[in-house]
Length: 454
Image (cartoon, rainbow, N blue to C red; front, side):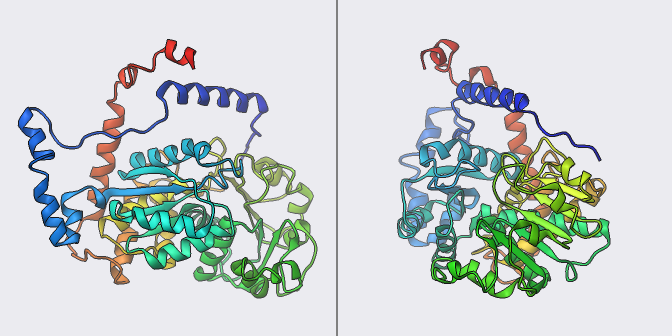
C-alpha cells in the first residue's frame, strides 16, 4: 500500500475552494416543503384552518405528534462551539458551518432531516436545559463538538432525562467506527480482541468513549495503556485523582488499565502494543516512526486526529505497521463518524427508540464491519466501506432497529417493519432530490456581484 502525505499546497487549494463554495451557496442546507401545493385550497389544509385538526389530536394524545408531524424524522444537531474539529473553542457562530455539514450528511446518507442548532451556552446546566426545551420538536438529539469534561455530563444527563435518543457523535459515533475498523483489521492480522494490547493516545471524548465500547466488546482493560498530555495513565496520576469528580471516566481508566504500572509518555505506551488508537494533537510529529517500530508484529495504527493525523500513514507503514488508518477522506482507510451516525439514527428513529445503548452501538459497529466484505473486500488499505457506498446506512439502520426492539427500547415493535427497504427509499429520495437541484437558481440574491459586495 502506498500513501502520500497531503502537501500544504493541496490543502491551501482545498481551503480556498471550500471558502468560495460556501460563499456561493450561503451554506449547504435549506428547508423545503414535502407536501403538494398546487392551489389556494392546499394552503387551507396545511395551515389554517385545516392545521387545527392535527393540533387538537396531538393535544389529546401527545404520541400523535409522530403521526401528524415530521418529528419522527427530525434530529437536532446541538453544539456550543467549545471544541470544533481541531480548531478548539471557536464559538457557536463559527461552529455553524460544521453543523450544517453534519445536517447535509444526515440527509444525504440517512434520509434524516437534521437542524443545526448552535447555542450560546457555557455550563452543563445551561446546555442540558436548552436541549430539554427543544425535545418536543425532535425525534432525536445529536450532540456535537462540546469540550470535555462537560460533554460527558451533558450526554449522561440528557440520556437519563429525555425520552428521545441522545447521541454524542464525538463519543459514540467515533467509538462505533473505530470498533468496526478494528474488527476487520484483527481479521487481517489474525489476532483476537480479547488478547491484544492496545495503546490509546489522547484521552478526550473520542478515546474515552472508544475505551468504554471496546471494553463492552471484550478487550481486557488490564491490557490497555492510555496516554494523555500528562503521560501514561495509571493509579500514579495524582493530578487526575485530585480532580476525579470532574474527570470520573478518566480516573476510572487510570484504575482499570496499565496492569504493568508503566510510566512515561507515548513511546512507553506504544512499546509492545498490537494496536494504536490515537485521537490526540493534530500534528504528524505527535507519534514518531521509531516508536511505531517498537510495536508488536503486524501492528495496527489508527492516527485519527483532524485535520492532520498524529503520524502520516506511509511513515507508520515504513516503520513496520501492517495497517495504518486516519480520519481523512483523501487518504486510504478513512475512520470517519459519517459512516455510522446516519444509519444509527435512521434505525432508532424508524422504531422510535428511547435511547441508544452500548449494545445498540456494538450492533451498529458489527453491521458496519460486515458491510466491507458484503460490498467489497477487506484489505489492509480498505478496512471500511467508502462514504459513497449508500447501502451502508440501511444495513446499520436494520441492525440498530432490530437491537433496539430486542432490548425492549423501541416503541414500534411490529415484525412487519421493513427497516432496510424503508431506509433505502428515504435515502434514495434525498439523493435524487439533491441531484435534481438547479444550483444556479437556488438563491437569486447570491450573485457574483453580491459576493463581491461581501
